[in-house]
Amino acid sequence: MLLAVPLTLLLFVAACGSDAGAGDTPASGSPSIGADPLGPLDQATGEPVKIGVVSDGKSAAVDNSVQFAVAEATARYFNEHKGGIGGRPIEIVSCETQSDPARGADCGNQMIEKDVVAVAVGESSVTESVWKPLSDAGIPTMIFGAGNPAILADDTSYILGDPSFTTLQLPISLAKDKGVDKVASIVIDVPNALEVAQRVAPGRYKDNGLEYQLVTVPPGTADMTPQMKTVLDGGAGLVFVVGNDAFCISAFDGLKAVGYDGTISAISQCLSDATREAVSAEVLDGMVIGASVPVGGDEPSTTLYNTVLDTYGDDIDQAAPAGRGMFVVLGGLVASLDNITGDITPATVNATIKAMPEIDLPGAAGLKFRCNGKAYPKSPAVCVRGGLTATLDNKGNPTAFDVTGSSPIPD
Image (cartoon, rainbow, N blue to C red):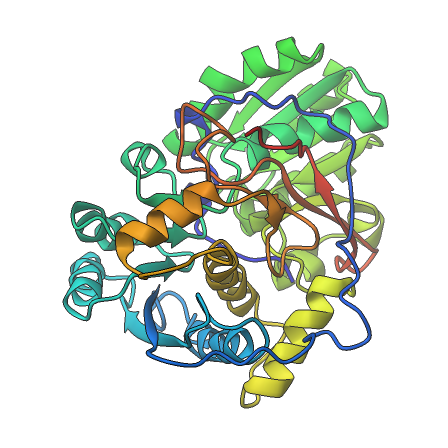
């Protein structure tokens, strides 16, 4: 029930610093949206505003085609209940990359040719290819997640994910919450993961008064009992696992085999149907996982999302995490333009996004965003501090979502 995006997408912290300390008081939920989740009617009129929507859609590796249906439903909701953009209706211009870099670049160029004023990009394996022509043309682009340093520093790009949250703020915040003084990270031995674990993590843990133990394990290791024995002997009160589901299953099994009884946490890629089937209930129960979107929750933002799909969609799968991700990124783009006036052009859209106040990120269970470049000054495209966590039940399903590691973004 958690969004499965490419592992490399979540391991881009190495390029970023953090001005917000981990371990901030967690918050949960979001303001009540009233008896009618959609709110009162506020019909957009006049000349449509073209907004681009780019998704990998369906390829050999992934099927995120639900994102296009969600984008259309989301636009209809904003057009009928939020006055569209500047009072004008949103017209969606879609393009499918099929996870092909050449198609991604073509999608970027199509957006320019079709005169869109901004683009929303769902989680994608070819984000850089889509982004480059848009950036060169000065088209504002809101992206679900990206790790390319050039994107993070771009003046017309906006990232709706905290680059330090998934692999650092999450375990540090959880360790402080649990009152433990040592964290062991079990990390898959691949360059993207190790860059963070070896270069960035030691100093960050030390700054937060925590001991840190790094255990690297090659991909494909079926029996991790020997490595988990070193964790047990090291006395870590919290174990944080970074890898894909097969890797994490082996790690969880190894921890159980050696009798580890401390807290276990992991990135969202660790959790899949295969994990739920393979890992024992006693290991899953109470585990805290980084969550990209709150699919499976029952808080107000989920009620709104489900109502939007019921009202404006045609039998869209509400449990599809990729769909929720598109609602977050497109909803975030439109919400950031609530105060736009006058001509609506790429330049005025870009200026309006930068001037927006801090507000709730649509569909994100109370997570807030602001795109003035001050969330992480070293990476001015980042609009979010902190992230979502999900606590699992004994079947591996989320029981609650919390905003963790968040702090206000300054003026």
